[in-house]
Length: 318
Image (cartoon, rainbow, N blue to C red; front, side):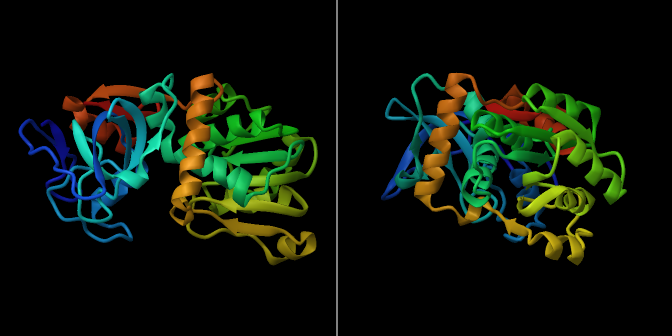
């Protein structure tokens, strides 16, 4: 079968035409892959510098995907790059039966693959960890990325009173605006007080909930914009592993700073979230910027995704 293979950490995959097809063991299913996204986790694992350690090579990358099993459309995760085993960037993959999530027949495999675990993080950080309630004012940091675009749309459809998006580049801000944000704030300064004032002005008052994939200065500014007892849910640190959030802000407002990771979800929680994401995608209320690339072009697509030279999330089609 055809598959993308990582042969050396730090290098893009090669495409092989004759990789042996997987043979599912007990409790596993053979999935014919329809769509495999190139995600930040795939890129990180392939560097050999992730907290999962250096992967055994060669391996097929792809930590998630959409395919068919017995004629049914399914979403699936893999442990590719995190543990021995192959992933979704191939014509077929063996997946534990219990990890498969059946999707609506009308769902677009590429659209669901592009959303995937990024949208799961947005949904669960908003509704479960962030305890979102209809009518609340929400700030979404990093709103041009996959998590951010999904979070803006989800907050809107779940009944937010006002959704403020924040992003650094003009392209990212355009994506956030297309996602339906009421206002978009540029992250073009490291002045915490200035950014905090922008957030408050854009939200027409103090904010109830912040979704934060960035940390760093943006998180410190967003924390200042929170109302008393407000919540900030952190999902990542792409703007910095530390943040100048000051003790006075935390204590004076009795704020809650909460961490979130998809790794803490149970299978049942993850399946529920994927189902919600797929249903909303099928209904046309949830999407992220993406482009489709044939599996044969995986090496070039991998490098473009790594450099950020894309129209959004790249999804490979075997």
